[in-house]
Amino acid sequence: MTSIPDIRLNNGQAIPQFGFGVFQIEPKDTAAAVSTALEAGYRHIDTAEMYGNEAEVGEAIARSGLDRGEVFVTSKLSNDAHEPDDARQAFEGTLKALGTEYLDLFLIHWPLPTRYGGDYVQTWRTLEEFYREGRARSIGVSNFQPHHLRRLHGETEIIPAVNQIEMHPYLTQDEVRAFCGEHQIAVEGWSPLGKGGVLADPTIQSIATRAGKTPAQVVLRWHIQRGNIVFPKSVTPDRIRENIDIFDFELPATDVEDITLLNKNERTGPDPDKFAGQ
Image 1 (cartoon, helix red, strand yellow):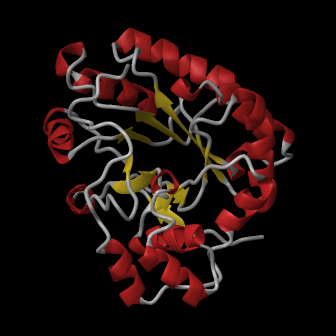
Image 2: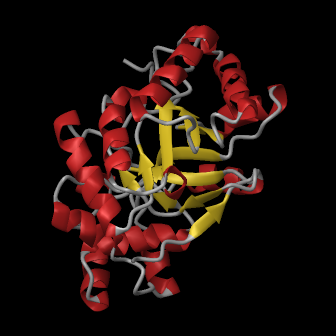
């Protein structure tokens, strides 16, 4: 069994640093993909209400034979459910779909500064309810920038445990990572391979050849050594197993730096300061 390191969150909870994502995996393919991941040693699954596959994630976990406490499960609040009562209803729906009494981590998916009067603070206070009730073991945010986090810090009681942001060698997010580091907020990277766009980069290809690993494995290892939490996705069993096979080697510090220097501030997804959630 692959030994995946844990990261200790600011509330004392532990999260596996490496997991499996199900973004854009069709519901009909999700249970099989998650089952393959769990068999390969993944113990951290990242889903969201908006992905439409929570029920299939829950199905795979239920039939895995693993105790619920052995699998770290994250989901995220739908963009159309930021009003407090809507958020409560959506959270109940997530628990029901996943077939669980609690989530290990529940996130606000996007800050949506142009919707709801820009009031993501009231949404966060609703997540604080779930945390105090124990139905969300940890709560956090996704796609929040430092100025969004400063508002939460000034107007609410609980510091987010996690900020999940787009992050890969062409978008290293050093400013956001530094801010989160100063405030004990763990950083997760979605699209850790830049939707595959970084894999043909000559620097990464050269490092991969030298390491005897694939470009994807090198990039995922780069994330791990920088302290990022990542959860690549795939529906291909061989790729699922290949992605987790990154704990038997280490990149030299010079290689980590060379990959970091590839940054272009190039997003594959929306700008969090403009995205309205449609």
